[in-house]
Amino acid sequence: MDGTELRAMQAPIKERYKSDPAAAMITLKAKGTLDAPGISCKLETGRAMAIAGLHPATGGTGIELCSGDMLLEALVACAGVTVKAVATALDIPLRNGTVSAEGDLDFRGTLGVAKDAPVGFAQIRLRFDLETDAAQDKLDQLLKLTERYCVVYQTIKSGPPVDVRMAKV
Image (cartoon, rainbow, N blue to C red):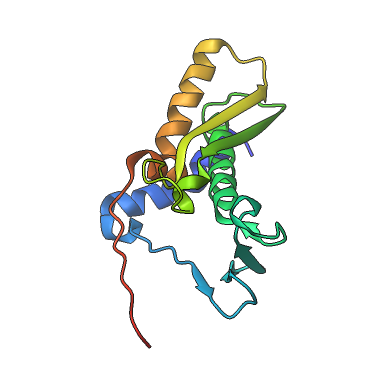
């Protein structure tokens, strides 16, 4: 797909959202059940079942998926799709490349060992290594627009309000 094809494919969608902003509001959903063995949560991904559990640094076996890893994987997936879409729209040729994310966690916070240790990532680093002949100014624009349009990056960066409730069923 080239930039012209991408713009043609997205044009009617963009027009619909301009004329009917409410149509652009979509609720994505995730659901997990607590019936998996051990300290784990079985996720319904829409494609297959995934079981998340404790990270080995908190006593997990390493067999189940770590939710921190899944967060970084979601960031890499979203950033990867976004950088390719933006490069396509701007006609910036990418021969190949990698997207990687790493994050620093202090598990003392998660385990309640030290009250001054944060719970969650202290820092996340996202990196793009691209095989391209594009000029640096084009790559700067590509990065700026990728940051702007990557849903997961913007969500992590902006920290939207999260409504949490618990109910007895």
